[in-house]
Image (cartoon, rainbow, N blue to C red):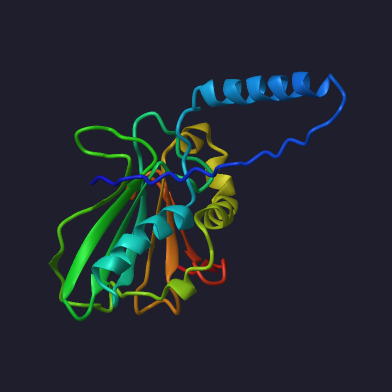
Amino acid sequence: MDKIFLMKAALAVAVVGLAACSSEPAKTTEAKADTDSAKKAPAGPPEPVLAKTAFYEMYTPAHAWAADMMPISLKSGEVAGVKNSDGKAGVWVAVFGSPSQRMARTYTYSVAEELPTIAKGVKAEAPEPWAGPTTAVETFQTSDFTIDSDVAYKTAAGKAADWLKEPENAAKPVSMSLGAAARFPAPVWYILFGNTKSGYFVYVSATTGSIIAK
């Protein structure tokens, strides 16, 4: 899935005062040279981002699509050239559902492109039929999403500390997903170290940050 990453730049305005000292023009020229050098400096490699950063980049276009939309899920992903770490990811995929339209729509946010499958920024897929919430997959309120992915990751890593001490386990990939279900009192983070067959997973409340019993 692909998404279009929207970057915003801020303009800085410098005010230079006049002075009788002949050394002042030289300082202004030097400052301008430094500014020009900074502008010419190449941008660094793309960095992974927190879940909330990506979520709200996708939330805005999703709300424009359907004012009554509600989040269904949010999941981390990977893109070439970007290393996921400490709860940050190069790609996040969100699904929103519209009760009035009975449709769901998937959005992807990526900090880099990996053509032809992943585009940089936010991208929306076509809406698909949605039957509404179920006991296994419920919608949740954005106000209940208070714990960001870095905090959830740190909590989960602490719980999995003994398992992660093994070198082969520490090297395994980590995936994170956020969702709600009837058996939980609030949306939860599902952090998986490794895979479902030979990995370690932890549930962390996205509202309180506490570990949820499996």
